[in-house]
Length: 295
Image 1: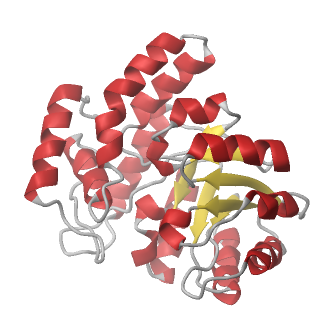
Image 2 (image 1 turned 120 degrees about the horizontal axis):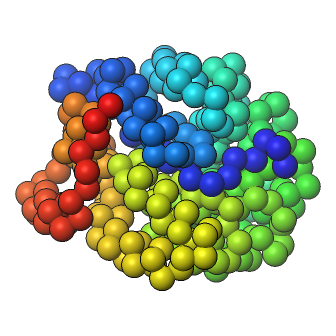
Image 3 (image 1 turned 135 degrees about the horizontal axis):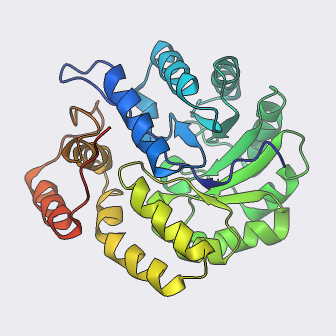
């Protein structure tokens, strides 16, 4: 489907100043870094973006800035806690130039399985192509294979991002049952297995995009041993990037150390790096020797 984003689509972090305000120069620097890595698209307002901590006005500004910098597909996350609030975010994303919305099911009042189908069907009617975000670890709401199969026939639903572990099994099951484009998440923890089982893209955090580009290119070029070796080398950093409560600070600290953004400031309920994680991150980065980025 022409509206379906595929390939390497990093979730952009949201840079803040030391005072906690949007840092637009750092956002532009971050986008420039991603484009220099050869991404296939960009995503905003995902979990790795601290999308849960952004106001509607900030979302509008961020999307406008990113859209102005690239003609690549832009995916906007939607995390409304009801159909009405999700539709509001979807329409705002469409008005702001997003090519696709990545939509979580409502999660405060847990929907039934039939309500999950009803919710995504109604959201898809808003006129912006929809990617289902299947992330039960975050929402507590499973999107089972039967629901995905039912939604595959709904006009406007183009794809699904699978973040229900074990993701390779879910990727294969959804691919066989639904025929939607399937992308992996979970910070690319099972990247190669997901591609082996039918994924056509991945949507990780954004601090090691250059390394993932190389891994995916090796995989596509039949250089599997090289791809696996580089992926194995990257895994300790990937795993730190999903540490509960610390993930956002990890993403940003790496970006700061690489010279891409200015501060690692996060917003509550995200937490700044604590000493144990900071020590582990420093050791991992010392081993990886990631290059600093120079514009």
